[in-house]
Amino acid sequence: MSFQRKTVRRPGRVRDPKRIEQMVRVDHAGEYGAVRIYRGQRAVFANQPSKARIAGQLQRMEADEQHHLDAFDGHIRDGLARPTFLGPAWDAAGFALGAITALMGERAAHACTEAVETVIEGHYGNQVEELRLMGETKLADQFAQFQAEEVEHKDLAVDEGAKDAVGYPILSAAITAGCHTAIAVSERV
Image (cartoon, rainbow, N blue to C red; front, side):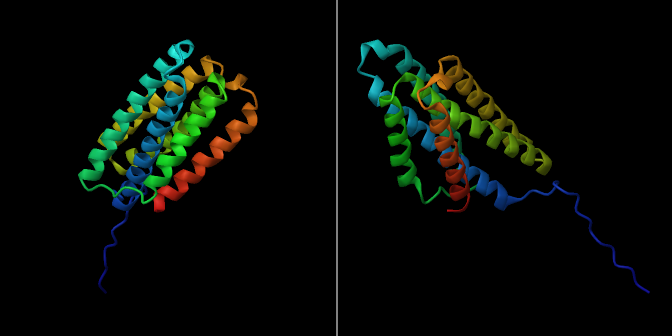
């Protein structure tokens, strides 16, 4: 009688290139969208002297998002993923969301940041855990750093009155739902 030895895979310890590709693609799309949101908001606030404070805050947050986007551009160039085919849609949608919330006022602009960053905080957190289980510590560490910066954005938005925006519950729920939809679509398309 011959015994065949079975290779037993330990759950979560196998590198999953397809899953990593999904993560990089969706995060690239998300960071691109975030840059566009901040540009839309800055387009409204930039030329108003009374809005210099928020314009400066948005510029700093946009710079963080651009840094994240540059890192994901590098991952795409290195072959970890292809970009989403929906880039043009995220371009227009991100800028429009930013401009519309800015036109609603400073608190609404901050409510947009708070809603987006709350979703992204959880999203990155799940990815970091998944990457660590795969043994992808370098990528997990990078995502964890990005997550920490997103939390800083969220905390600033809350401190600046995001939850006091007119219609906050509805605005936040709509933006949150949009983020979850964009994540689900961008992982695949």
